[in-house]
Length: 292
Image 1 (cartoon, rainbow, N blue to C red):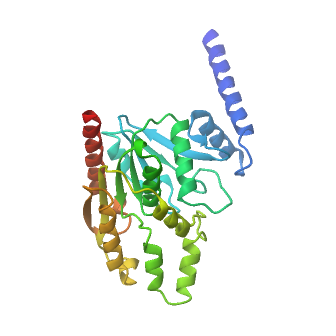
Image 2: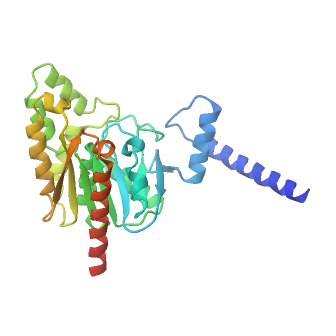
Image 3: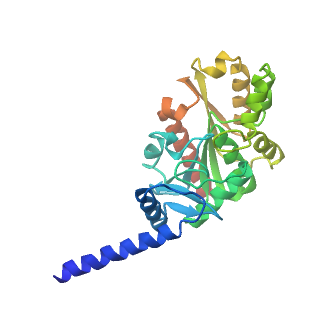
């Protein structure tokens, strides 16, 4: 009888805590249905939804080790866009994946945003959840701009970078030059914030141009190669290859890996290449730390 009473009290306590979390959800996102509210309340209670200054972001972390590997997804892509790579990496490092504002289970933010706001959110998220620096940042597509800006603003907190078919700040203007009207105008409108995530890629590119150059650090660029995707059909392959090579030269000993038979989502088409690139950078970062 005593055990049943104790179990009932524990259950009641947990229910009350979830209920309190639901009450404290805030106005950023309204869900229809009690199940979603309870799920959200549970995530807040257990640290899966974290306030970063007026809105909450969904985060998952597992594995162990230093440096932690932080995954920064592409435009309008949720944390699940990384496929099996985070699980693979968790065998040798701590892994952090998250949803940016307006994505997945994170809160909606109405105004247009840039890499600057994204970096501020990510740093606040890492601090709030106790993920200790230094970090290895892994950025896919637009996430590459965010990884670079983070490393530029907080050089002592970044031990290495892996860029996965990452965006280059010059690609938007150069791709636009290839397009006839009205395609060019539509493209620039989309890249200027008229996208699902409300990210102004053009302004983000300007932020990268104005940023301090990267300090010397382990850098690997994994570039898609060989698949006849839309970018190639539109004549952008030459620009893509040129800018991918340029990214690999952002650090003194940067390395480029060409992912044959892969589209833009190299982490899905060639997960083993991305995993190995991350392992290499983590090991290089650990070696550098031991020498300090």
